[in-house]
Image (tube, rainbow, N blue to C red; front, side, top):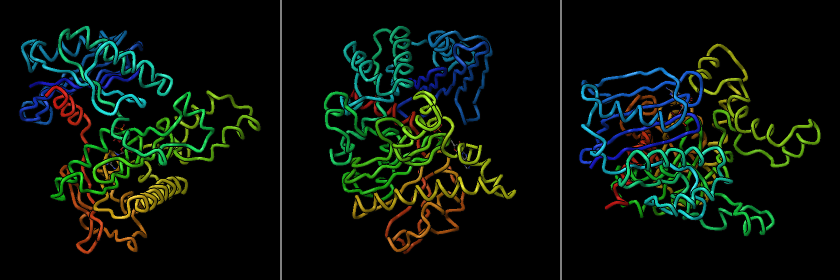
Amino acid sequence: MKVLVINSGSSSIKYQLLDMQTEAVLVSGLVERIGEAKGELTNKAFPGTDRQVVTKIEQPIPDHNTGMRLAIELITDPEKGVIKDRGEIDAVGHRVVHGGEEFHQPTIITAEVIRAIEATVPLAPLHNPANLDGIRVAVELFPGVPQVAVFDTAFHQTIPAHAYMYALPYALYATDRVRRYGFHGTSHKFVAGECAKLLGKPLDKCNLITVHLGNGCSMTAVEQGKSVDTSLGLTPLEGLVMGTRSGDVDPAVHAFLARNKGMGIEEIDTMLNKESGLKGLCGMNDMRDIHAAIAKGDVRAGLALDVQTYRNRKYIGAYMAVLGRVDAIVFTAGIGENDDIVRRESLKGLECLGVKIDAEANGQRAKEPLKISAADSTVAVWVIPTNEELAIARETKSVLN
Ligand code: ADP
């Protein structure tokens, strides 16, 4: 079975074609700057193997349809391609950011499902329309091929009401479904499943704290294999300190800025999403640049690292209280997988709660899962690479089976 995974953004499409017999990636590609003067497509056939062929195309790509057609031409190219024709693709799995309260699991896309995703657009006005563009293009390009929507919010639909409700007038929930939804669910679920295998326990017996630290950052308390709380909220802004997103702030910041600085709602929203977080604190949002700046004595870069890792620590402590017993803490995504300093600082002082890391193991670089807790740590600590594309492909396959 071959599954094409599509992650469609407002001006980009990421795609992967996987052979689900072996879970090998046959093609991995990125269409960028859709709708801009200069578009770009990078297609890698057999990525990461000695058969890898990289093709780059630079030309205007006016819309998602054109971008996806170019990608399909490369995938089926007689010389550089990996399959003979698009008929070899058995299913398409789509990343969909927001599934509202409607979707608890991956779902086969029908006209009715498309309408339900459209209905959640007010909850994710930037993401869901772009995801829908990807779905519409794929439906047109692969008529008759099953299409599956895999929602970032679905894994968190098990969160109980006391954790998903905000203490706002109840009518806001009743009429507008204002509540915590949580995101990165595909990644949290994937690393939780991988961690259970490493612990040698069934997932439904595992209590875990999964820490996804990439450009976007979130943490999830997983009880008996189910998400019971998560740091992202109604939108992907709440919680941890991210690359450019603030995470938790006093909600009165909006009123303060509007009253005292004359800022409008769009301006405030842009500031909190695009100009805050690590970037807001020190001008840089890539952790590698921040470490380089700290090494040169940049005090604000040091502050940004401290604010982020302190917030991580605070949430880990909170989720330990939520779960009571914790089998493992799992770090994943760009920062979580690569940054031993962030991991060390995020766990600093938690020895009294049974969390001890092994400095040497933590300093190792690994593409494979790595255990970084000390032998006498009550709570295991793991670094587990996330793989959202593989997770989407597996979910797609399981729905169709
Ligand atoms: P996204 O949320 O966009 O999927 P990723 O999970 O790829 O992001 O994470 C991207 C971030 O990971 C970068 O902005 C950078 O801060 C961080 N990162 C990547 N590689 C390293 C590294 N070797 N050391 C520290 N941080 C890294």
